[in-house]
Length: 305
Image 1 (cartoon, rainbow, N blue to C red):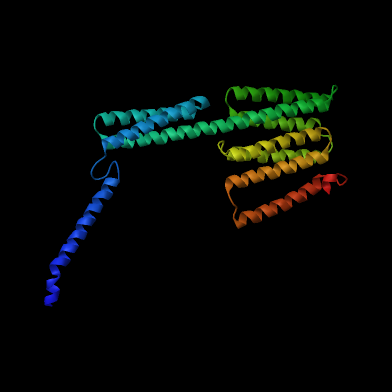
Image 2 (image 1 turned 135 degrees about the vertical axis):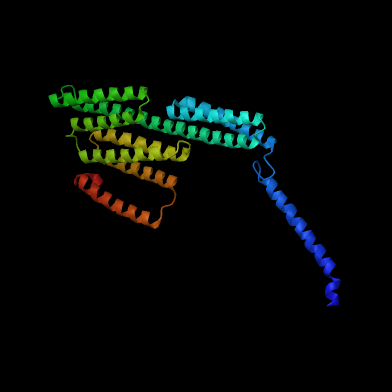
């Protein structure tokens, strides 16, 4: 018992040192919390955050101005208003309010940038679709020849009118309208030369085109590697249509299949590794696709083998 009392002062001293250490650590943690912690925001750090937001707003202004997206412009205006509030509150030494306002401005600026970038992707998609429709109309005019039937002439005039409307929609930045009109052109010109050889292969190319449209919409514009795969797939679709117009069914079929495989590879690269259920669905879809292709391609064609 006497030995226990002998070591008591040392134990108390050790415990006191531990408590002091924990208390100091607690203070360090509080200070590490940054603006808004129990000790209050640091004016120097708040100013640095405000200046970071100013830089982001400058970048957002350049991106939004290039896109011309009205929603992005509106969102950027909100961001500027929030940043004005932040600087006013900072000058009044209300650092916590200034910090919250500049974070809000930053979120709004980033949202404006995202809207502007989406606009750019949709614009590119619409312009490419209208270009495809214009080329399809030119090929169909060649297919119809110098003396088209009355029905063919009416459909060609309708398609020409639709192309003009689609180009006008592009000028007005009505991207969805332009896309819809471009699809109408493709549907119209398909009827003009419906007697072309292997019409089912033309439907296959249309299916691949729709798959490409989905991929072009889903893949971010800054994913250069995947975008390059999609561009090469689109070139294959164009060559497939040209081969179909020449009556080269085998070549058109091969181009459609290669383009489809490339687009699917690009989608897998973008979306990541599929789970087991997705693999099962893909196998079923491929089996159905093969069965459909077997029905579409003439038995005498080399592609059927």
